Structure formats: structure tokens, C-alpha cells
Image: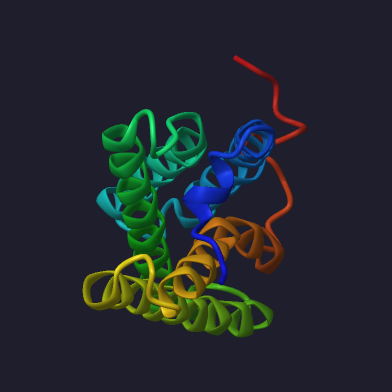
Length: 183
């Protein structure tokens, strides 16, 4: 039977590997994409939408490593809160971002339209997988065969959302312009 992710990442050595990889991944990929999309949407999305995306991105950047640092056996409350915050922040981020991109599709180059559609499909797939996981947990518990599969699927989709986001983003410059003098 497939183990639950939390059972794997709390094993000795895997916990350290997960924490190190998640921390580097979050502070490299997550925060870079959050900042890049903040700049990309500045003037297109409303200030409140853009600010919420930034806040949700920061929450996801911090909570993913916390899931590993606070294992479910020793710190079950912090682990659970971190997991819920991570899934909610990434899920709501994906929802708001794809809605903003879709609503303002005409303000982006035509070559970005396929990527915007892909992000809409990924958003739906993420939420369907999360609902399947919650359904399996509520009605079958962690011993039900579908629960670990749904958890792995949801986790891989949610954790890799910002990686996929960076591949669909043709916005390669940093948040600061290279040729502008610093104040």
C-alpha cells in the first residue's frame, strides 16, 4: 500500500532532505514567481488582487518547509495548520491568478493565451485532486486505498504549481530593471 506523504517525510533522513529541498525550492522558485507575477500584473490586476496574491505567495513560501520541520508525530498541530495553510494559500493563489489572467487575456500577447488556458486547467485539476483527497479522508480515513494516492496527487500538483507557473511565464526579467540606476 502507498504510504501517506506525512509518514514518509517524517522518517529519519527524509525529513532533512524534504526540509532542505523545500526550503531552497520555496525561496528560489516560489518567491521569484510571486514577485515576477506581482510585477507582471501591476497595473492590470487591481491593487487588492495583486496584494492578496503577494500575501498568499508569502504564506505558501513559508508554510511548505514548515510542514517538514514540524513533523506530524511530534508537532501534529503545527504540522496540520501548516499543511492547511499551504494548500489553501496555493489553491487560492492559483484561483485568483488564473481568474485575473483570464479576465485580462486581451492585455497579454497572443502567445501567452495558451499558457493562460493551461493555468486555468491546472487550477481546476488542483482543486479536483484536493477535493478527492478530502473526500477520501472523510469517508475512508488514511487506511482507505484512495487516500494516499489522492494525497500524493494533490501534493505533487500543489507543490509543483509554481514550477509550472515559471515555465509558462515568458517574463524572465527580475523584479528590478537591469539598466536603471538604484536610488
